[in-house]
Amino acid sequence: MVRILIVDDSESVRKQLRTFLQTADATFVVCGEAGDGREAVAKVDELKPDVIILDLAMPVMDGVTAAQEISKQGHTGAMFMYTLHSSHQLELEAEKAGIRRIVSKPAAVELVPLIREVATGLRHATHQTQNEQSGLSGKDSRSRLFPKRNSSVS
Image (cartoon, rainbow, N blue to C red):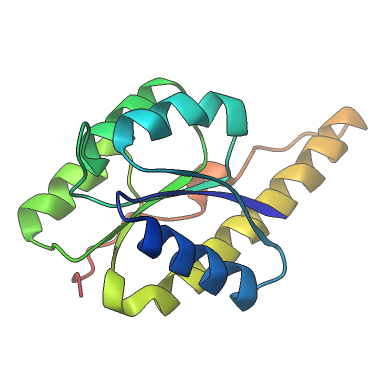
């Protein structure tokens, strides 16, 4: 199971994304929702999501600032920005904040393979942890799930 936190100021967007993701893959579980960045930061410790999907433009705290705060908390899961906005400057700011990829809202289907990569990494990390507990050594591969790449934003 991949635990997902959806953060968007539009309740209808959150509902549509929840329905889409849970229909796309039975292993995707939306563990929570937040209507702004500050609420997301507060929920991360409680919900412990594997994936956080953040809108950019939200009241109270925007998605990039929320990602920075979440990263400071030590969250090791993947964060994706799901937004209508795109620019080279946003890509740079998002990457610095710990966001792995920006996905255009009209291209929601792009989230599915990205989240599946997280699931693969989680299974691998769990297997490695079991091996380490059995006396076998290995490194946690979660940090290698999404190599930095220069891709264009849709």
